[in-house]
Image (cartoon, rainbow, N blue to C red):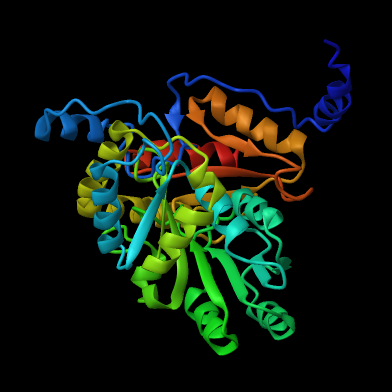
Length: 367
């Protein structure tokens, strides 16, 4: 079969020096993964499950939740997580992508309005694209621009943002955003993917840290980052849960997570709330990196995601290559993933990174 028609777009990507390739782990110091607390690196879930539970969990669920794939453990886990996150109910999805796609594609209806932060994750934007509602972005964390959009909105209004933004590492001004939503009768949806496990006294996320649980229509907590496993949960009312079970296509038409995956999620939720020392070490690493001088623009971030802007695909790839040669796994984020001129190193700090490793990273960036 002739597939030469694919070459045009592939050649364009190569000409932009932005061609992506898969890479296997090679033992370098991890400054790129989302394993913020080291749950995966230290195999904490595997060790705890072995210690506390001799159950042999199934690795297949045999069907969707509405057919053969529902079981007691997943429903018990949903209730446990909803209680931890101060929500009435929750529904587990196979991934954060599935959760965002499933929520935003089915809840807003024709004639409704979705207003989303311009830097919202691709999974949120793809869900919005599949909705029949009209949608508008507002400038990143710009409250005046958000209010301008709210004043012009029609139908049921949804405001979508992230608590911690994955490509800038900054936080949304959720208290002010929730106040605007209350003023204009809008429904607030917050993706907590990069806050779960890291933000809050027990890693409960930014919404709970700010006391805004009741102000949110829906929250999405994903498990593939600091939580150290896979899947996601949408939190909200019991009515929202029932709605998603009936109308969310990425939930209805997907084979359910197996018991083994849900057991890992449940186990992780016994681990990360108590990882106070790891979160304290992270805060120290973050403060030290933020204070370090370097010749490149460094974005302000109080989260493990630290951004160094190095304009141009060629230049940022060269700096990343120098770090890789020194044994530090730092990846460049290239145009078109980010706007031209805003190419960057996305440096992720972890509870298992040492100050010596970070200082080596800073020395190379200065050179």
